[in-house]
Length: 213
Image 1 (cartoon, rainbow, N blue to C red):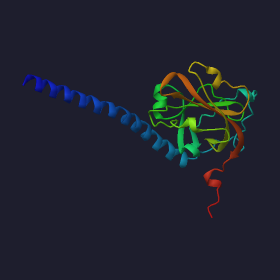
Image 2 (cartoon, helix red, strand yellow):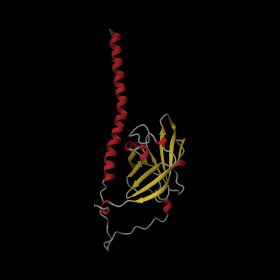
Image 3 (spheres, helix red, strand yellow):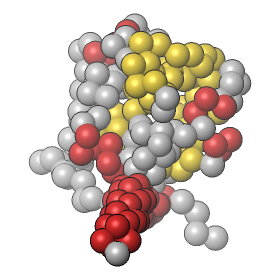
Image 4 (spheres, rainbow, N blue to C red):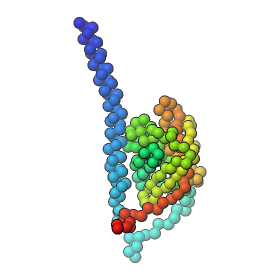
């Protein structure tokens, strides 16, 4: 009798443990989904902030940066679109554990898209798994990144695996490109890297300037 009771308790324990293991990825997915739902709504319906005016009633002129090659990434929330993978996701600034819980994140080393390397990291098997099928991208595939009122269109030119400590992949050499990084689920010591070259810059019209007819 005691053995039966003990067996039942062990069985109940394993059932609870199994449910807990299932609940963890569901909770991670829910965290990312909640943030992405709000972020994409914000990106799809941007609030146009009033423009500060100078003494003559005109917007103040912002001079071009002295060293455009060193220009940093604009502070806007990004919109990353990869049609082949059915990915449409908001990109936050930062790649800490907390940042990547929300979705893909810009590496702090990222340069301005028009002057250097824009690098983005994301999980492959948790928190939305936005880069789950990143390995399916091949040369010629399209990647789009929208920042503010500008969309940058890239074409993939390389897809490879490197050591997780190989930081050269996110370095900028002045070539306008995008770098997507994610882990290999079966081997956390390496990273999957996809690189694309900038092929087109599209200046989008603000909502109030678009034709309503």
